[in-house]
Structure formats: C-alpha cells, structure tokens
Image 1 (spheres, rainbow, N blue to C red):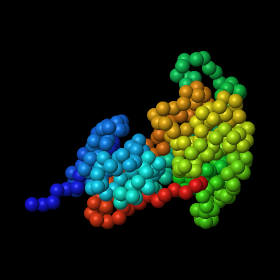
Image 2 (image 1 turned 60 degrees about the horizontal axis):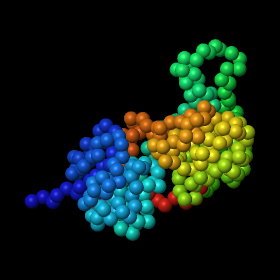
Image 3 (image 1 turned 135 degrees about the horizontal axis):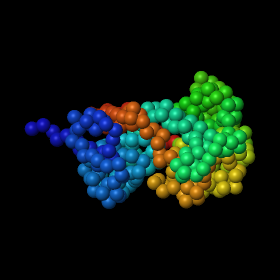
Image 4 (image 1 turned 180 degrees about the vertical axis):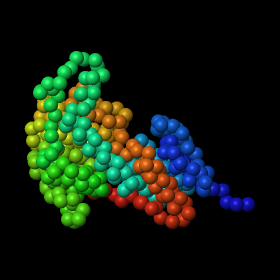
Length: 325
C-alpha cells in the first residue's frame, strides 16, 4: 500500500490555475473564498497538516502551530511581507517559512506610480465630482494638481520594489534619494543617493514608502516625522503600518501635505474614518500586486515552496528575519 499523501491546507482562493499544480501531487484542502478564515475555523482546519499556504490575514503564532501539531513542516506565506508569522515560534518547532519575493516587484511599483499620479493630479476628486452630477466647467484654476517632472522623489525602503519605483522616476526626470538599511551598490541604486531618514524627508516633495513592516518600522512616519516633509508634499504608502494613518489624515486636514495615497492599511479591511474623510487621500483596497500574471506567479511560488519541502528539500524562497530600515 502506498504512503498517504501529506495533507496541505490553502487558506484562501488563489489565482486561476495555481491550486491544480498542488492537488496533482498532494491532498489539499482549499478554503475557496475571497474572505479569510475566522480564527477558530483556521485553527480547526490546520490540525494535522504538513504544509499550509497562508496569506497576510492568517496569524501564524504559537496557537496556530500548536493546533497544527508536530507534523507541520512549512508555512508558505502568499506575500512578500511576513509580519503575520512568528518566525521565532516557527524556528523553535522546526517549521520552515517561505514568502513570495521578486515576482510582484513590477506590478507593485506600477501601482505606486498609479497612486502617485492619481494623487498629484487629483483624479479621485475629479471622478467623484463628475459622478456626483455637480455642475462643472473647464477653468484655469479648476482642480489644479502638482507636476512631477523634475520634482525630488524620496524612496523609503530601497529593496526590489523601491528600486523599481526609482527606475520609473527616470521617465519624469525626477532626482531620487533613498533611505535604507544599507547603502546599495551603484548598479542597484538607480542613480539615487542614500540619505539619513530625517534628511530624506526634509528634501522629498514626493515620498514613496516601500520598506517592510517590522517592530523597527511600525509608525516610523508618525506626526513628528511627517512634519519634516516640505509644505505641500505628497506621500504614497505601499506598506501597512509604517505610516501612522491618523497622523497622515491630520497632515492632510491641516494642508501640510498636498495629497496622499495608501494601498495597504494597518487594520485591514478597516480604514480610519479620519482618512476616509480626506478628499485628497487616494485610497486603494490593497491592489499593489493585483494583476492576473502577478497573482499567478505568487501562488505558483508558494506552491513551489510547499512541493520542495514536502519532497524533502529546502524552500525555494525561505524568509529571513528583517532588520531595521
């Protein structure tokens, strides 16, 4: 009699064609929903699994690992981020952790630029105006925006996505500076120069936040740090929790900032009422990697990690513990 296949749990519906690669090799249970599993449901479903493909909404902590039991070998996080995973608890139990870096770089950088253009040219305000049926007419002063050409751009977090954001700035002739855990080799810096954080903020008319969330970066951009930006600056946040969202709303309310855009929220799906009230806040429901090609690549990489470990090998993309920005 053949050995039973190691059981795998997939906690969310994945992009088309992804799960079939997994079920061809293993007994997989799929939570076929756009919504995350409730905590009690997740803990029941993970029991006895050899591998779990998780998303950022799934908290992988001691309780999760205890519920899974000693047979759990890998948690494959369907994300670049992994702040939902207690890496120390996994290491103590010998559970491997992987993520999906690299494959979503282009789509997330494109989204950062989409948000930046929408914020600086007030596209959200303009669309809401038209859809409301309010009267309007072209006028020299109607919904005036901010030009990007030649405007200093700051990138907070110069990893793959930050580098891709900086690379796209060339088309707008924007001088770029960055703050990072380390200085990049010239071939990776995309012509940008490294600055201390406070210096970066002081000179950035546009700031794009792409650094990972960690204990060191949570609310790194609080009210005091946001106040260092030039008057009339624009902030684009692609990472939940790094920018204090209530402080960001206050900076918009006081008109210290010209505009802001946020794609990833600290307490998703909740968005602070203070931010929702700001006309010059462009808000997107976590769409940074939301293209068919990218989500298929992310799901495929998560599956690759599971297949590799359950075959007795190492993860394709193991997670490393993040340091401070």
